[in-house]
Length: 595
Image (cartoon, rainbow, N blue to C red):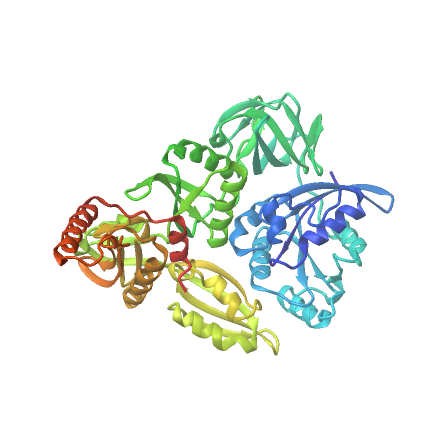
């Protein structure tokens, strides 16, 4: 066991960790140059297209150092703020972390928050300065930033380049020398932490685990502690580029187990595996419970696909434990699910994965956050959906969640970022100059304001040079109203939103204008209204398509034309009574992206 090293890679998005992981795999001959592709560990099409890591991936490398063979278990992690739960799980399975900082961009917000996650777990941190071959790299300036942040010795920061492979051998040496070997006893009762799982059509559910104590062999009867279910280990092994079966996996190692589990709810990420005959005394303290930040409804386009959508969501939840969902129904959209996501990118990725991996076409409603409603009868309850809001006369006050936002940017973008955050009801807490040109801004702002498009706008006003991270700081009282959208007097519940009183009129007007552009014209007038309670605050009308019924009358008496027009008028009246307005999917999405 003294020759095993478990480590993960943490960095801000786009600091080159997947490229560096490729070089590590190449140098240890884990994959041949024939198998190597860019971002080898990012095996989803979606990850390659967007150039981001969505899932953490484990892989085992063999490395010999000073004549001794070592086993290195690497877990590559995502860098985007929406996937920090993935990172926390990887960190729980490791003893050390490579902290990668881009030599041209310096330290950014997600670097800092992931670093704190690793320090809380007591991991050994190896700072690495990546992309030193770039013409815009400033190695000395960024080294100063790392020294300020970590308080490490300047010489312990390793310069490297994932692209050219420079300095990668030093990284492997540092992993062996600096990261401690796993602590655990092979003779103790089995104790293994599940940190991920995937669904395979032929083999059932495959759970990935890290053995803390004891050993697990093929054919062992095992038990999952939290769900209290028992299974036989049909196959155990370690994770190379593909799964590689072994007879036994020992303490300190990372591996997988296939035991013919068919039901997704039987595997919980963070659960402990132990032997049936000689169980461990206590389960491993897992990682923090996931806190969804953004809620939205996901509905099948065809209502007959409801059960299929449920199965797809359960399979997806195995692979992404931060997805939370429960059934709900809507008057406009039928049966679907209320889902909790960690952020807007997470929501977008889930929707794309449902469409690509499970062929499900879905409609997503307006995302919102959860609020706490205090009634006059001194009872409180949590609202995750605007339609749960009770009669305004019974409400005492509503509280909404606030966050502490940390933005790191170049000093020339302070003006636009301040005005963006103030416009989102943010309160500037403090600003700190990290260097002469880089500044850290701290705000307190409502979570509901950043749910829509804050991240996109922040990137555009700062030309991509601002990094953003946030954590929740509790609930505060707020003046909120529920705004409904009505089409011909019928409320579209999927477009309802809870918004701050000051912004209601403006948003209502813009939503009506947008819908007027997007809804197809019918044979009758469509009235689009935004309403708060019984009060209409904005209205637009889509005029009817009109057939020219008098075209065949050339001249002649006016009464002939009048007869035809009267007949048309009656038909229009009847049509307005029975006609219904369909809202296309593009309209739902466009209303979300209102500028």
